[in-house]
Figure 1 (tube, rainbow, N blue to C red):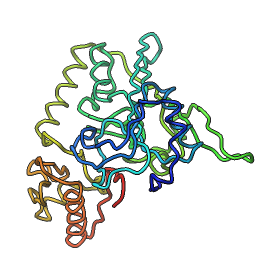
Figure 2 (spheres, rainbow, N blue to C red; figure 1 turned 90 degrees about the vertical axis):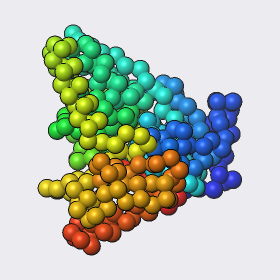
Figure 3 (cartoon, rainbow, N blue to C red; figure 1 turned 180 degrees about the vertical axis):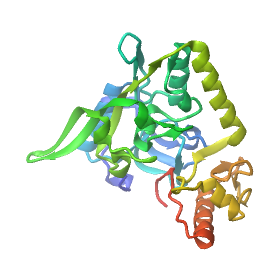
Figure 4 (spheres, rainbow, N blue to C red; figure 1 turned 90 degrees about the horizontal axis):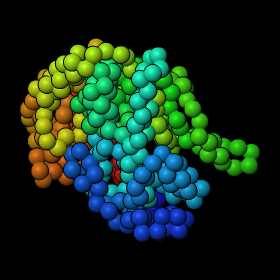
Length: 317
């Protein structure tokens, strides 16, 4: 996202279209899993995928910088906040189709991914058990190729509905397109969308499921949730901080570097799992960012491994 002085941004097109729904100077901490973040210059809630199309198209047409906020996990928003518009994605429609082979679920990008997995389990549909404890949205899962317990979004995706911003000889065009999995170029916790921010927006997905029995799916789902509760800290956390390096684990390296439980201000590297940084209640975004820098530097010095962030830094750093 390009940082811009709000005084140079013309919000009149959004104000005309959405009137009092466009909020100004909105604190973002309440919308994030870690309860951290400064003030957004403007915030607008998208209540459907078609409204998401309308908002983002207006932003592109009027050169309004924007950031789409889903469940608020896996992001660290700076204390300086976000210049421009935050689009709060509340597009949450879900439709299961149990008659197709294989059975599928269509979900808008603002739907909670963990809740989607639990709904599938209640219908005796398998394939998403690995996602039961994931707190983010479907759209965020696509962008970051979310995964756990040996599964990932790429393994379930059949297609994604995308709003794509393209250059033409007459300027720009905004097209709703259906992208197959290959076009999204999935990699470990990565995708085309994550590598090319600002070019496309996830509207909805179609995911592959499998027929099973309710009790079997529920048992597996419960086991994964129990494992997550045993191994990951409760409370205000950003989720996994760093990607696991090839052949190793970020948490193991941070712990071996002597940083497990280390604290800066109100932020702490979890004593339970060193790849989770938690807000003890009075942390600032800078406290967490300083812990990130410390972990990276110490692991690099001790083990010659450069840890790559899994979370996204938002705002001015």
